[in-house]
Length: 389
Image 1 (cartoon, rainbow, N blue to C red):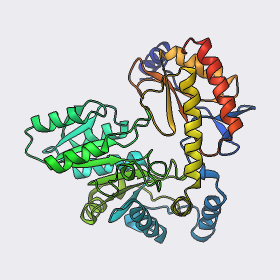
Image 2 (cartoon, one colour):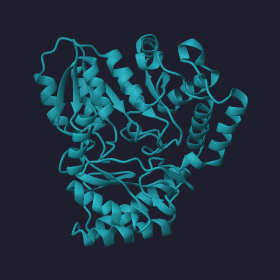
Image 3 (cartoon, helix red, strand yellow):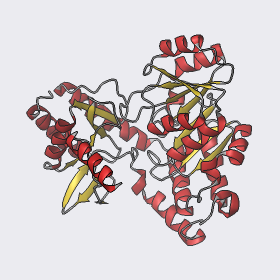
């Protein structure tokens, strides 16, 4: 086996897709130490910089003192402490749904929800660029899979009309696509839901806390808050903590409690994580200043990168893809930026399609103008040297 794995790894290296783990030390919401050097972190998903907010840290510490370091059991056995009930109720109210259920993380949530609610008798219409967790969940469900063109509601409608499956019909999409930063046409998808009676599952992991006037997510931006059949999102991005949740009708939640294997058979989240999420949620419910600071930074960065000639695709929001194309060229740009004190990772296949390797830049509210100006200068210099602009 080791010889076979060694050959496979060597092939990965030759393709320019070899991955290594970079062990680093966070210094602040925007800076890290890697090795002996300090870097400006341009690839954090903590969009509101809440993972270092004093109120969030204080809540986590208090929970450890009051509840201990861990639950040490699945929720159905002995791990469903009262913090779960508080957080599930609060996130459902915030998002406009009747009931919520917390999972350990987004991958386990998507696997558990989709493989439990959907069967081999059903058909799933899936955006061609959906996240790997959604793709794997669809495979596990055993349902017929129909792929529609990325963000193309007309193609989706054609495929819905053409399909003759007698079971349930479900559209699955991310709200904000994690590698491209573009937004699903939820308004048009909801129209198809009403017109053809399809169910809609939305993964709002990268929309929560960022989009909409109140920051509740992309559904709010389309005036569709609480209108989808199943809504999944996470606490581990803009909310700065960890864990995921599903929101839906109470009967759906009850069924997941009784049948979702990734909910039933895993150790519950530690109290500190739940308390941190509760604190972060309370912060963004009563004050949108972090979101406003984030969007100020987003607009400033996007304006200057566009003016410099970078192609940012159809992205909007904090995820800004700088598509390079070749794997080795993308890695070279990553190394050149690191020499300038910029921590920005190369994203390569299989995470993105072959030929679309990129630098996935993300903006956070904690950046100062000086931080962004320095990043812009470094990106433009490297982009010109690599003849990308």
